[in-house]
Image 1 (cartoon, one colour):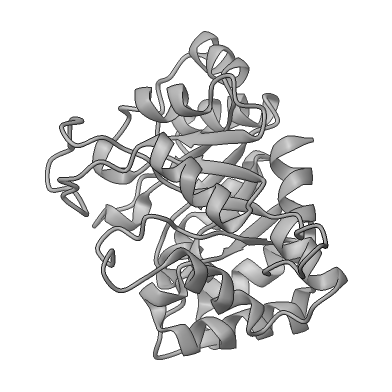
Image 2 (cartoon, one colour):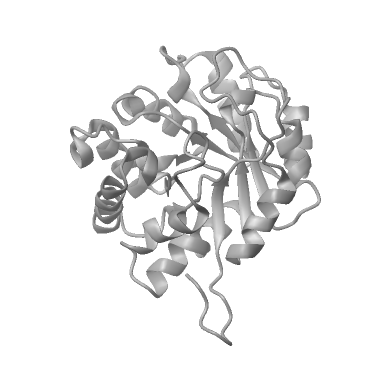
Length: 271
């Protein structure tokens, strides 16, 4: 995605990155123990270095519903948006304030849960309806074999759904994983998107396999590139440029690449 000398750089939107400061409160048994700063200033410098124009910050699961820093990072920055982690009893007035500050959705870090919540309860149905009324999305992070346990209820609620990291298919079953198939069907119904991100967490060769399957079976219109910066747990092994290259390797130049790296995310997060 590097620009030709003298030409404008291609427009890019990073649909998933994190910021934090060490010392922020951690949940019990966090997925990662983050003992260093990755401040909004550091992230902005990374975006500038790689000529990325827009970005969406995803709430990092180790901090639970401590969203204060993430919201402060995007507030007043028109080219940034955020997703937050919330308890299902959050009230509509809090949600309305968050929307004004740049929040566009709610992350469901269910991958950390040994037992998944029942999304058919009144508490969840009420809250999902509130998200839908705000035109927000829910941002699902879950291992592929368990996607079938929650995706039907999420779709039935009417809320838009964005699925992390190719849907994290079972590596033994790959594109034949039940969750991957359900995700494809949901994309075709028009209210589900998937982030083609963090292939390094799945096996980079598998990322290309999943990406090509997505392009072949559902096309490019619901695919979103994201860096997953700063690569929690893989800081010494992954770089921002590699997160770009991992997707350009299987996305042809031209209109397809523009959709996945920019157009789709601009419509979803910034319209």
